[in-house]
Length: 588
Image 1 (cartoon, rainbow, N blue to C red):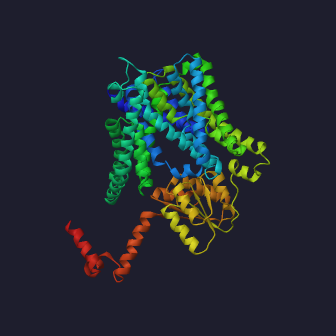
Image 2: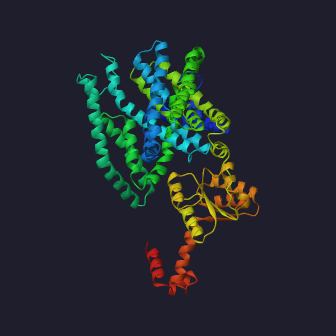
Image 3: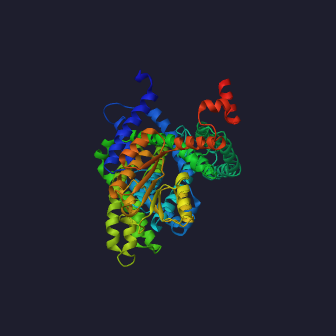
């Protein structure tokens, strides 16, 4: 019965309600993350109705933290940071310090301790990875200078928070004395060392862990992945990726007193060293997303909506720090570095929200008995409201930027960053959607034949290949009307939809057919149902990979054995290799 299976009930109800509310949030153009948090509020102990098991939800949240940090490690790139290091590194550090001081000041006004204020301020200082990347992609800023600065800024913030998570247990152990010590107290504190001793010993352990990961991890993990990949088993490869993340995270905690988050982060970084990192990210993505959703649900369970109504002024002050104080600090910092007003506004809008690391810090603060429960409620409420308001902030920036800076930055540059991207000037060209294994082959053929074409792609690795080849590219999801319109489908001759996602491919096909009734559309599919779906929406030719492989094999058989036309002839007097094959089958 359901009441005897709290784990199953918590997972099913949590994921089901998160799906419903996440879909509604997406429908109203709000990040689905808000829906996940509200799902947690709905099944939490502070709202009527069904209450999920909070202890189990907390354990599921731990897995979510591990997999979230693993994902951050998989996408951590020093190249992006080095390109904008002169502004991203000092700017992010200065902004973290300013925002932390604001949070500390508010905490002291509410009568909290200095330690609680520092945790509270740090939680308000860091932006959400998910929300930021989503926003700059939707506003087509990924390939602009301001977009690269925002991403670099985010990487510095993530790295700073990783360091905070590392030192947090050591510092927290000194704040909790006597019998009221936290469960994760390091061995150094148990040995009676002071703050300096704990910090030094923690740094030594971290250095040993990092050294071991850099020396052993960079060699062993890629070798294991290559070995498993050569077995041809997707199941084993997926298991290798996930077990690597979980085992390194768990082992780092047990052997080096390093947080689960840092262990998972380094596991992702080590997997990134392998050429198979992209496949590793794809294979782990479904489970990572599922547990990430459960993490946000578990966080929402701990939020008391009544607390925001009961004491609105602390919430208003917290939200003001996130939306105004932190953003204003980032704006002024960018201006001090003599960057354009539009760039400063973009960075300010990007940082006007908080997310994943804020939740982690809030949980650690409460678990270590440093941060009061009220602090966690304020952080969660501030996160939910700031994430909901972030799209409006970006829209306001998009309207303000051209008006505030008409002379310093050309109108075309500003429009390219905030308005729908300009339409390509090519005519009679081919549009290639996706530049993966299939799209790259199509693109190489078109280039060799000197036929005009352009590529639409979202993957950074694929875009790097496109740029290296000197091919015109448009960054974004082609299912978005603005992105597809930028390819000039009305003047195009062919459309090649080389992406494997049938739902997005269907939207692209339908929009392209509406824009140009004469365009010839060629798409790919993986099943008969997908073939029917894309054909019904307007595709002229839909190629299913399995059919083409079978046809290629048949052609190869005919080429090797031109005289055999029927199966009986093959068995009776055909090609010796074919005859041997049938003999082998009959003996099985």
